[in-house]
Length: 450
Image 1 (spheres, rainbow, N blue to C red):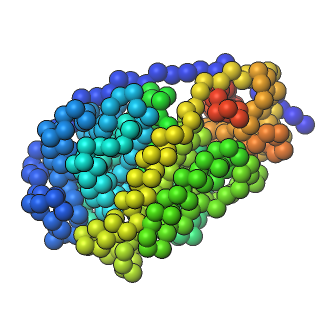
Image 2 (cartoon, rainbow, N blue to C red):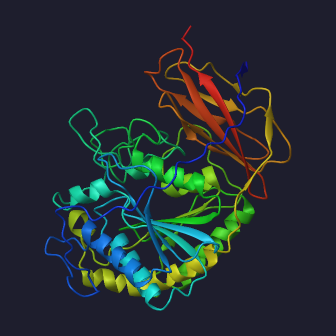
Image 3 (cartoon, rainbow, N blue to C red):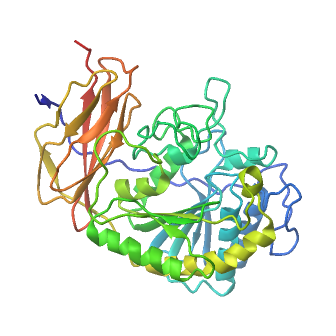
């Protein structure tokens, strides 16, 4: 039996204006910068403080005023701070974005990006690219980490005595879709005290809302790279149409070829593949999958290796010497290649696809149900793939990507505590082979069990 659902028209939302530059925080005097004179490796194991990061960026602005613009992502952090944003290069050039510091205990991202960009600026920024750079995304978490070692999340109170949401589990694509025990972490994204806690809803955190608003406000953004450590990987979305898959492989294999010491592994994927229906494991709510599936911005995750065999806390705080060696052998040239080739990627365009009628489910939408949702008839052209997301924690989507022609419905799960009568907003992202993007907004109503 099919259950008919009410459909709403496609909607588009404007993002708020960018905020003002963030000043140096009081009480955090700059203490130098490793590798640039006046500082060096900190005795507490941290390569950079937030104040040092701001100091270097302020110095860039003073030295290269024609190339640097300092502002902030829209909105503020949980604790009311601005998230610094730097534009390097001139407007009108292909736009790209780098982000570091989503997990403040990861020392390599900020160190390596500052070093790379400082070197590129010193020779006049030869790249014909406009790079948006977030040097420290998780500002609250970083300031906490400076006095409380090994902190990964932000600083929101979870209401049960624990603090923090993993900001890299809080984006909409597959949010809530991977709550089974993660074998890598031996924990669940649903547990508030977990290092991988996903939050109470997709985009619940203002930091994530700020990045999402930036994506929405910058349709000229071609590619995004979230920089992490300590894994030895270059990641990209596992499911994509053949043309995009080829573009991804060209870039990541080119980056590998420019790494001189054991090139990093890359995402294993096949063009045109899709996830199996049903509940599946794997990371959920990530930055780079959200950038690609929701906005058509080619998303990458670059995991800088630990250049030592230390594990746990010790491995997350490597020496400056080891990080500098890794930067020279496996990071610098790979990033130069990414800057040039990612700038050639095609932009996403606004699409004209429409849906006629209503979607259907194969079971009633009742608490604790797992069911399949099939979209209505799609008109206005041929579609290539679609991605489904939920905007309410009452319903999650563990199998979110489907290819054309549709073989399997989207899998959705209704939470056991979902209240009958709850109207859950959903978004279906429709993409065609020319990277034209159409969105379809609708609602699913939670029903009472019979």
